[in-house]
Image (cartoon, rainbow, N blue to C red; front, top):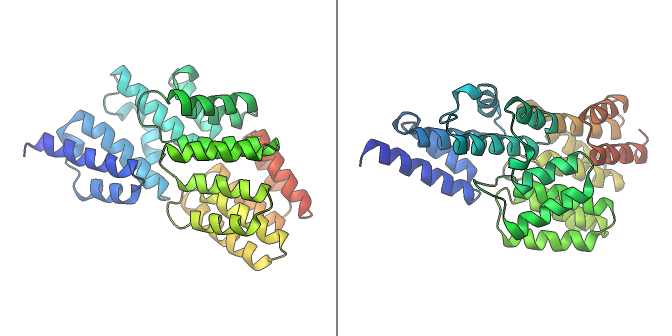
Length: 308
């Protein structure tokens, strides 16, 4: 087979694995033979993008961080449609991680309009800014109208954030309906939907079922598991199970070493403070710095309930 065709075939296979949520296998495939880097510009772009994302979701953030910093080296960045797809994908990844400020900075640095993003990214941004109606509206439009060009890697994270918004308004039935529609679309990072469903379970008093869902969500990809562990710690403390909360904190300490994002660090400080192992001030300061109203409200409520 021609070398360029072989490279294209390898990258296509890796993307197919990603779209089936087999990100770790995709990363291993791309790592076994990196001829795709030099044989085709399109293969180099897609291989680097999906390879970096696969490692990121698995808890290895170095490659993603380097690619984000060295944007001038992005393959095909002079081709508008390829540049658009890369910017949208990196913005989406940052929002999946809860990094609103970094996502907004990327948009500003690249002079990229928010209207050029997919509905999933616009919904997550709106939710993080406290604009609930817009977040819910974009989520519904994403399901009914599609999310636009490119691979929508943020769909599950969008549904998790939208469900959290709906639950904050006491709309658990609508949240469950949204999740049913989301699962029918079979998005990637589906374990984030399990975390969202666990939050609905908690809202309706099904805490045992929520605990099982949250534990299951921590057994695969690393991305988003900080949310699951923080929720598990909260459930454990409601049962006065300090050992269970300590287990969650140990997991968050490990995540903080591998993926020291703002949200992971916030959740680590939150559980520490709820366990009485540090003052609440550091956690509240981080939450205010992140400037995400619903997140801040959740942090304040848990600290208050646990004596912080």
